[in-house]
Image (cartoon, rainbow, N blue to C red; front, side, top):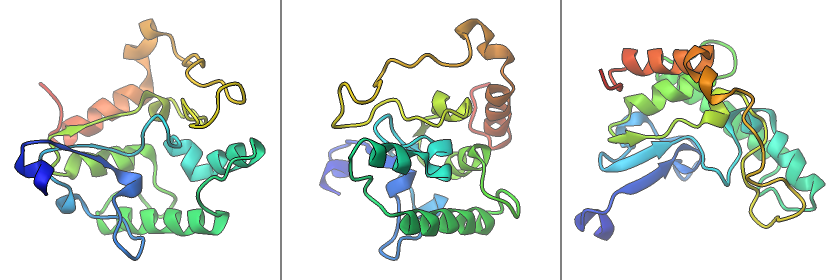
Length: 169
């Protein structure tokens, strides 16, 4: 609260925006003077998190992934529950577009859309604690910059943000 009183904004990572019982916070619980995002470059991408890919990669590198498979499954179930409570998604697993819509519904003034998530990339850009064991910051995106404006995932994100009244005209 002291930093907010000084005018310093928060950085709200959805993966960490949880209550004591592990459930995810609702959009109205996000601060206004904040940047909201699902993850960061040092955390799993949405597809990596959903599939548990990040847990397998970290274990394969001899690193503690920070949670068990059971804890991840519980978190995934809690995310699914949140999306249903917010009238997002469907009976299946939440999609990244559901997460985008959720973040757009927060009162946070800024939000980050991860290009890795939009493109469905499993690997996170960086795994802290590795240098040679993982190709940190060396992966090429699967879509050329010149083709971004034609990518259906990027177009879907733009449309979702427009529908949620979070885009620039």
